[in-house]
Amino acid sequence: MRHVSLLAVILVCAFAAVAQTAKVASQQELAAYLKAHPQSPEEYVVEKFKTHDIVFLGEYHRIRHDAELVQALIPRLYSAGVHNLGFEFAPFEDQADLDRLLTASGYDEALARKILFHGMPTWGYREYLDIYRAAWQVNHSLPVGAPRFRVFNLMYRPNWSLLQGERTPEVMSKVWYKGDPDAYMAQVVLKEFVAKNEKALVYCGIHHAFTRYHQPLYDFDKGNLDGLNDERMGNLVYEQIGSRAMTVYLHAPWVSSKGWDAPEVRPVNGAIDAVMSDFKDTRIGFDVVGTPFGTLSARDTYYTFGYPSFKLADFADGYIYQKPFRDYQGVTADPQFVTQSNLQEAIANLASPEARKLLTSPERFLHAMQEDADMQSRLKDFK
Image 1 (cartoon, rainbow, N blue to C red):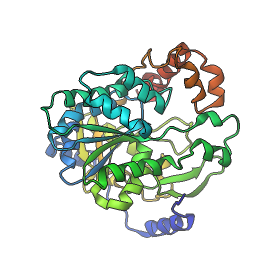
Image 2 (cartoon, one colour):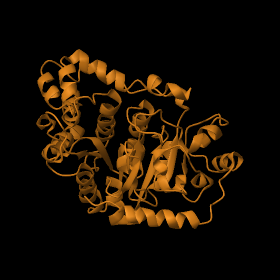
Image 3 (cartoon, rainbow, N blue to C red):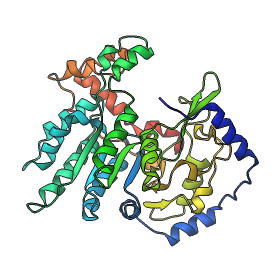
Image 4 (cartoon, rainbow, N blue to C red):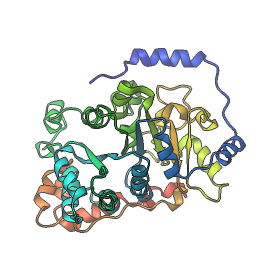
């Protein structure tokens, strides 16, 4: 794998340290910009395809209104001539089954579950499943001969059953037997969309969605920055097509500068939450680069490591805010996702040997999924 070297990071930091610091926009300037550019999240994403071919929509994971936004976007994308959605959460090996699902005369929910289950046996959430349903509904409404909307699974299915103990490089190379998952997903995007001159929305976790931003390789135990990762899916696509790709961030907490397990923090020191508290209609999408929002800085997040003059414009090109953190709800666990018939397969494909000893029944899988999606508990510090 290729990453930006530590020497390069040091040089960037040294240059940034002597560069003139840009003025940070005030709350009044931020509010004025939003009032002058009112767009719903759906309108914003669709408009971005006038100037971009690949739009990465980066999420926190398991937030209900984020997945519902993607559902709502599908018919609007189709009407705008964008007929493709890249979907991180299931394996490309099942693409033939997915194509069959989305073009069938009737919707096969059992097949949808099977496809998503193959991606991860603990990702059984209704709102992600219903993204497939939303695509099927669009296709079911089209006249004969019209191009169909396609969802492309981007990931491949790792062989977690080979992980029985320590995560050594040798073992993990066998688990991820098709290579780095970001590189794999990037190749699907480049082959299925870019090479065919087709536009696509790519829905994935934010760390896969970075295009210009390079994620810090930081060892919290040692307090060392080992470089910057320039091999995330979005980085690799951006390397090939440049500004034809962009990153849009779905508002969510950020990793703390104190570590992965420390309480998360508000993006850009809460500046976006503060300005949005004054707006009656809080659902909005807006540009970051070239706007007052791009000047916003942060001090308390991991994302600033390697970026001594960090600004929001370094992190993402666009931003979507839908509601305050106190109103966030998690996705809905599907009680039919893991059953007695697929229980042993589910256990074998858990990414943790310890979890295999605990999740020994469909009921325990359901409970674990519900706990992971409990946003009221996970975001309790943001009331």
